[in-house]
Length: 190
Length: 190
Image (cartoon, rainbow over all chains, first blue to last red; front, side, top):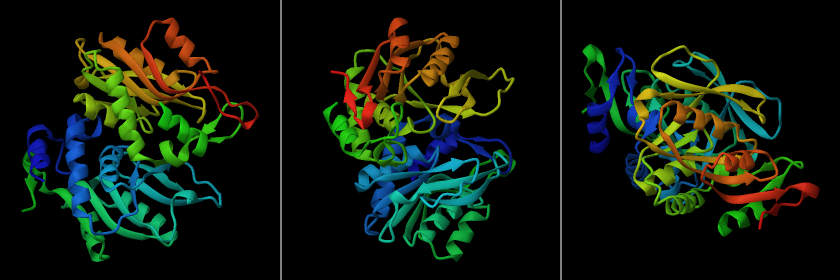
């Protein structure tokens, strides 16, 4: 997605070989016109997948996910990051590790908002090691529903998440794929 | 806002005299068409306030806030809830207490995303005791910027937040004002 890649080149900040900060337009300050374009792009890409729900993980996936769900005319569900696990028959949970925050979260979904007929599109802002995506997939598959697609705003292709998801056969679409951040230089996958 | 009030009556769940759950269309599952209508309503109401930025607090304010910021054609800024306070000259912080979660958070904003010329619209999903709004106001005023308006999706008018903000002269607009939740009955302010 050219608009996004241009903004990453103009406004992204390479912190080290692994970290790209996009706080000025995606994570902290949010460019809502860009989010709208991202929503249109995901909706168009996955339009034949018979998506019934858009899932995202709180909190920086919410803005692109709500725009996508609006365009697809399906509900968005926010998987909550709980710090403790809960024994409760009304919810699904999956443990995920946040490498950026060095914390374990329990992704949590009420059973009210998923059924085995659902075809779900997972939307998130970043794909790195794929921890959040793996957690969302586990919850969806525990519920007997289908992961119909995974839409990622920025993929760090040099980390393991994308290869992992590809190997399992998931339909992944990333709007910007970053090959390398070495030497303070942002290089995209062709 | 009639659409919202109708949905609250149909889908809201009164848990006790103080708690209304709207997990099926606002907080956990999110109705993105409703969020669009909410964005249009806030943008229309505050259109003459020369808003330069929309602020919200992670995470359930993000969906209505991104729609509002899209309609107003200004950036959205997500105030982060940090669990620890940080000594750092690059950020503003304000301590807030979450009564629902019984936790203290440090609302956090990078100084990069506010200037003294900003006229800011705060958007949040709920107004109860006004803790989150007070924290956002403190950050905005610490930066020398102006709180040009406060847009709330659901106000629990029987709690102290609205009166507090009115007394200080802030321009508050709530789309649904709940007078009482007693006896499992949702009653709106006229």
